[in-house]
Image 1 (cartoon, rainbow, N blue to C red):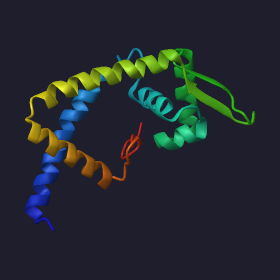
Image 2 (image 1 turned 60 degrees about the horizontal axis):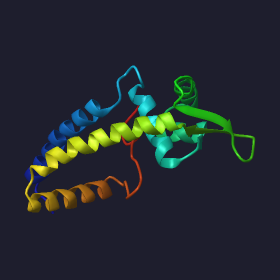
Image 3 (image 1 turned 90 degrees about the vertical axis):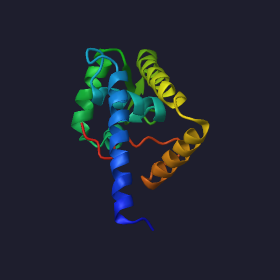
Image 4 (image 1 turned 90 degrees about the horizontal axis):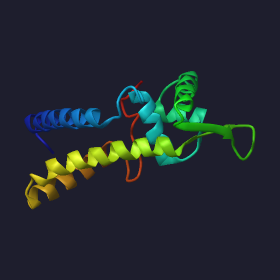
Length: 156
């Protein structure tokens, strides 16, 4: 069991690291003329989950469905998503277009490149420790492999 001082020290270390990661993420989000942060979050969710209905997208983003409808109106006008009837024809499906997927892919590639620059500065032993620690942190947060926890404490 960790002592209180050690626990608080680790919390401080994670807080500082999160500032670095959030700053890096903010720099790699497409220009606000292209999309807002909330719109980008929706695109990432659609890329990772595939076609969703508005209710499910709202749930994943932790926002009201009416907010999602307005957000999707803007994304559709930009040609980044498309809406159409789902297989049961009672629901409207929202899916990302090729342009929307490309936008997410470009931002993700830029983010990977920036992270690669930082990780390269670490020794092999430090990389292994970092990887192990980040997996443990992810698991403690309840975010398993392949899942996105965009809504973990986030609101638009």
